[in-house]
Image (cartoon, rainbow, N blue to C red; front, side):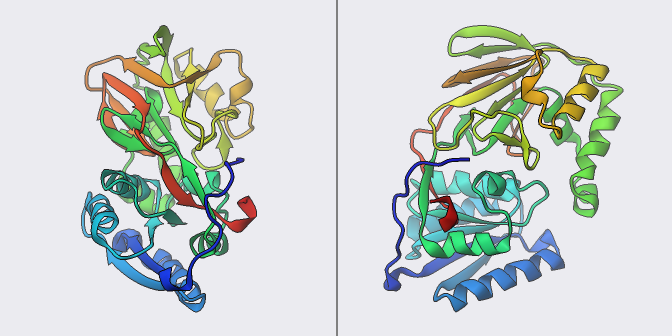
Length: 308
């Protein structure tokens, strides 16, 4: 993805202070990867303070506190898309004062893919090198998201995936949940108002980035730094269409299907079964009906120097 020109590309030697938010329940292997990244940052002259979460919501509270009160100059979140989403919400509540970086340790790591962070070395480069970009999050019923929000089948998969199974087998947990739900999901129609125009769809994904579920392209025209959404309407429901969509996604064919509609938007309203889940960045963040708008202000993120 091409992002806008950098806001800054250098760091004063006196301002090398990083606050790092990390979920210690992520497991030993991920902790070792984080420790290696922190050693690399310290070797490059950065002072790293580690803040560990203990429960759901802690990443948001820590990010809000750090952005409001800390003397640090950058905020780094080590985790998956869900932990990053929490931290983004906290940072934005505090006005987004600190540049925001990530060390991808999750299952899908969609935001990392979008920012061009393909490995731990690039995550360290992004945090240390001072290349900044602005991105525009979305807001679903008051809750921020960075990559996408959705209603329909994919939101039900997110709502029903087993957390313990996800830790064991990663993305395959979503595949297992998808197969299980496919035989009992009723595939209702959703009413979607896009900038005042009504549509109907079997599922809806409101995208800020062009990747979905990892490095699979769903919305080719979507850009994190552009103040608009790309709304993907899956116009046909049912088990067989679901299988067709699922096969087309990893092949890069999904946006080309005739029954997939991609519409640019600045405001989206989705109506459907009352209290149906709405997923945002891989977690349930709201319930229907939902109104999705752009955040009031952008967020500054750190990307690898090669993205400059």
